Length: 247
Image (cartoon, rainbow, N blue to C red; front, side, top):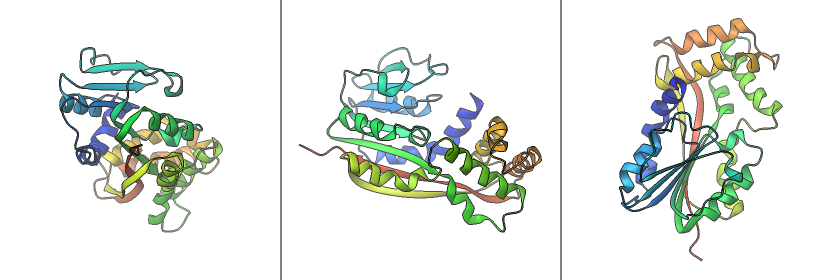
């Protein structure tokens, strides 16, 4: 729960202006895929009010049980297996597609669930961008960065998924209205640095199993994420605002 809250603290200040740019109004029907600890779902529900709908979907609803009354509705399970009987004015997805081999099927279903003219705000990371700040390869931080990218590759996933996101969305029928990329160049003890430090601790076994880093590298990487005097580029996030064509 603490890690999910850190993710929210690191990303919500960038996400909320994107959602506001859609012109979200009272009465809208909204969907949050990968609701996590619920901060964006809460924001959506507050904006749409009692006459609107804010649906949250996650594989686990452990931290979403407080959303029991209208305008909220919580669904648990795999998105592709869940039946939804609503069309939505706005759909938000953050850091979900990079973890899914069936990303194109998810994108097609998201498009199907939008009303004509409805908005999708999708945000995905590019972990390969962390290499831009490397000064040589033979240091703990660089080894951990390489291991993060290799972990995704070994799972058949793309560590630079964000770079392909706009094209993938266009390929299934979305109309792109805006794309922005934000590099997370941060000091230690900032929300994003703390997210990456916590992730390294949780995923230490997976990172080390790539053979590109070792436990002592993980510890030094984590120590730097807690050092307010150390700045680094952890990754970047590409955000896409798109609409379902009016036809």
